[in-house]
Amino acid sequence: MIKRHLVAGIAVLSTLAVGGFIAEAQMMTGHDRLHGQHGSHGMGHDEYTMPGLRGANTTDAETAEMQTLFRNFTLMDREVINIENGIFTVTTTNDPETYSALVSHVTGMIARVEAQDDPQVIIQSPTLDVFFMRGTEIDTEIEVTDDGIAVTQTSTDPALVSALQRHAAEVSDMVNRGMHAVHERMMN
Image (cartoon, rainbow, N blue to C red):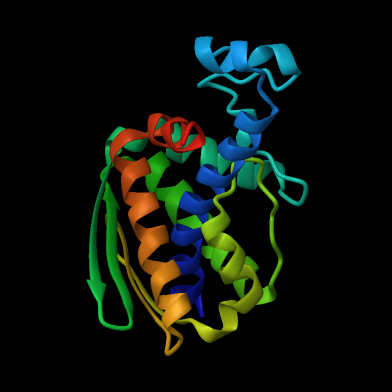
C-alpha cells in the first residue's frame, strides 16, 4: 500500500506544479506576462512562498512539502524509463529534509489518487486529471530506499500509459529546472 502511495505522489507533484502555474498565468495581464510580475493580482508570487502550490483542497503540510521539493530541486536526481505499459522512475536525494518531503508527498498524493481526492492545487498540471478520475486503473509498486524512491506504474489502458509517461517527463523537467520549468509551460 505504501509503495502505491509513493508512486502516485511523485506523479501528482509534477502535475500539480504545472497546472497551477497555468492557472496563475491565465489570470495575469499582458503587461505582467511581459515583465514577470505576479504580485499585482493578490497572488504574491515569489520563489519563497510559492502561493501557486496552495489548493482548494490541500493541507498546510502538503503545501509545505511541495515548497520544500521546489526549493530543493537541485538536491534531487531523477531517472525515468518508459516501459511498454507505463513507467519506472527513481528519484533520490542525500538531503534529509528533501527526502522526508519527497516520501511524505508521494505517499500522500498516491492516497489522494486512489481516493479520487483531487487537491486542486493552483498550478496543477492537466495531466493529473485522468489520475484523479481513474487512478484505480493504475498498478503501482514502490520501493523506498535509503536515499529515495523507485516507482513502477503500469496500466492496461493506453490513455493512462500515455498520461503516466507525460507526467513522469513533467516531474523530471521540474527536478532538473525547478519552477523555471513550470513558468515556461505556463507561457506556452
